[in-house]
Structures are given as C-alpha cells and as structure tokens.
Image (cartoon, rainbow, N blue to C red):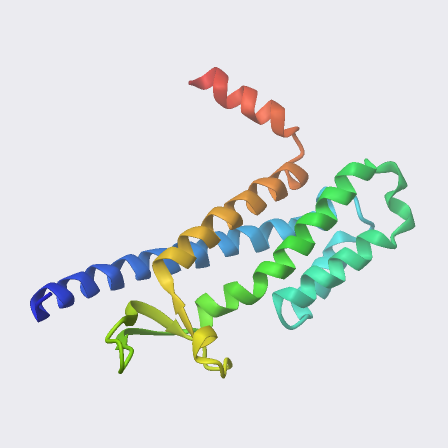
Length: 183
C-alpha cells in the first residue's frame, strides 16, 4: 500500500468517525431527554423537582442510579404497572453500563495511527482511534472508532426505543399502528 492510498483511506475513516461521533452525541441527548421525562411519564409526585434534582447531579451514571433508586423505593407507584417500572429500571441499568463507553467516545482524543510489531511486522493498529487517557494498558487505551461506534449506536437506539415506550403516553403498539396506517 502506498502513502497516497493510506492517507486517502485515513481521510475517509476520519470523516466517518466524525459522523458517527456526532450521531452518538445526538442520540445520547435524545436518550437523556427521555430520562428527564421519566418522572412525569411515570406519574411521580412533583416531577419538576425530580428533574431539577437530576440536573444538579454530576454525571449521567449518577442520574441513572438516583432515578433507579427513586423508582424502586417510591410507594406512590403502586398504581403504575409493575412491569413498566421493572422495564424502566432495567433500561436505566443498561444505560448505566453503557455510560463508560459513551464517555470513551465523547472524551477520547481522536488520532490517526499505525503501529506494527517490531519483530513480526504484523499490523497492530491502523486507522482512526480514540485514545483513552485514563487507561494505562495499551490494549484498552485505543478504541477503534468505526466498528465500536456502530455497535454502540445500535445498542443505544434499542435503549432509546425502550425509553420511548415508557415515556410516550400512547401505547407503543398504537404508535406503530398509526405509522402503519399512514404508509
């Protein structure tokens, strides 16, 4: 492979990385908007105060944990479908697990790099990566963007769809029927 081909491939990969990272930021924002709508969607008392409390917490992971505990220990949710509460808590737990990887995408330092093994000349790294400055182990320090971002976006979209089922007042099946009727 000549230098011109490598630069062209890297330029394409960098452009794809920018698009994917933008999609992650936008979709994560949609997810967080749905998380902030959960208190009113589930009929919690004084949802505005809960939303304000969520806004004052540092970090999305803390927000997910706080809201999960609130849902588990709120006696006034007896009139809300137990399955709906359980699904919401499961989605919040899933988001909490995804939060570290989201931070990796948002706070990683983008680089174009190539590294070969000195002895075997085998390619170790080639392309666009995000350097994770807090990781000390070299294997965990570099996150290959396009593949990891596409997988993350798929999982995040699933979570967002689940959140919409909880936060939208109309049943999800009713929305599907509405969209099918318009098609």
